[in-house]
Length: 270
Image (cartoon, rainbow, N blue to C red):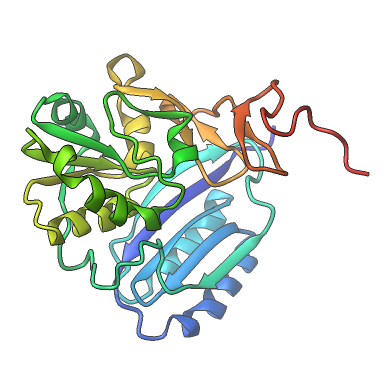
């Protein structure tokens, strides 16, 4: 039996003076190791999800940790029965996660990290406002019980949403707890809230993926599945393969074995 491939989700906010100069060596390292997926480089750091053999990932992660400020890079691992990416992309972008707030710098100020085993107590506290910072289609298949869904199609819409609803959101709440898939969006969203004057801000360390990995299902406050940006589509407790698929023409998520609610049953390509 072929051993499962390993999937690595990673990010690091650091300063790259010339991200363009880092692209080709990193691309070459991935190609030589047989690693596929997406890595994004920007002046603010690196973000991505890649997959390959454990040995291949070790090589690439070693190359990433050799980059300036990436020595302490944290990685969230999961497994896939087959390669979950069709190709390799290493791209230079303006931001490694797009929020569109140029003055926000997670290296200078972020919320308080909360470990997965302490998360339940925080979000069960009636004084805590819980916000899911992910996009609407991600929230649709799973979220934490009691979390507010901003119903935003893009993370870029989050600042405007918060500013528009700030008073009603914070009414009667002393703390704000936010979460996302792997943690990177919360680095920026908690930094943003602190810049907006919100003092008690918390975020889930390692994101939903780390929570699903570490917290037993019988103790979990997570409901549904977690969308992931690869061909596995969704994961459940214990990071087990989920039950959702994605329609290629329209992108809608729906349970495996059912028809897309927009496009109907899948048809073979001509």
